[in-house]
Length: 360
Image (cartoon, rainbow, N blue to C red; front, side):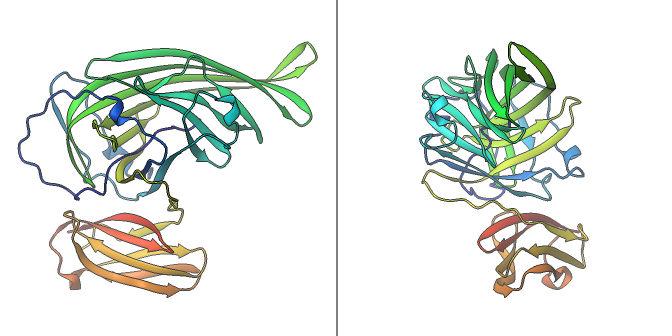
């Protein structure tokens, strides 16, 4: 199952400048739990070439400073919307849940948010092309509250269900061990801003699943799945709580990094940035090419912003374009921009993607 809770903040001032701030150990309370209508728009990066830049320090009981403002390159929108469970696939299996999250396709995650924090109730997932509801017992924590430095909790949970596949009854058994630890605190900087007094939460989870076909009183195993995941997340004690997140593989290599780009507490529809875009060459001091593809005829806008959030150039202004591959050549030298990092914002039919441009 994909991660259920992934993002949070307001398009805060880009690269907000904060002077020396005394960092204190943060306690995350129920104020950080989401509710129906919350939408967390994360900017995610999974480009293999970028991943070595995202490293994490060891846990510590003294304040730390993390700076990820220069590490993101090829980002895409990764929004998470919290909605009411009623009417969603498999919702009747989770009568105690008060939040639902679409995990993509027909997969739905169900959560319980309350004074004790945010817990995973289970999920309705697609297994071998058929739907199966897995009710986690007991509910593993996403973020228990109150939570502060040095706090840790481990939950061993199970779930099982039967479903039908190719006229056969299939038994699915899920097992998990989830450990959540507040292992560090301090100040973290992302391309969207600097956040003081954050709490870093380390989540380590081991899962194993068995899928068997039931034939009368007998069962025949057909598949075994094992997985180990590690996640580091930086939280502030506000509704826009999660400001930075890093996923790592069993080998300790970063596989995904994301930061909070925008936050909304009103119910509305968020489009996924599902188009590909690229800047090359990058870094550059002469020209760069913005390459992208319109799935259909589209209105396209493109602008360049500096790290204070100031728009420094307009490349396209709601221009009507045909479907197909497009390449926009940008004369960086003619723009006479100082050396440094800039963000190129590309919007196609209302869906936006941001790319990092390094001018040397």
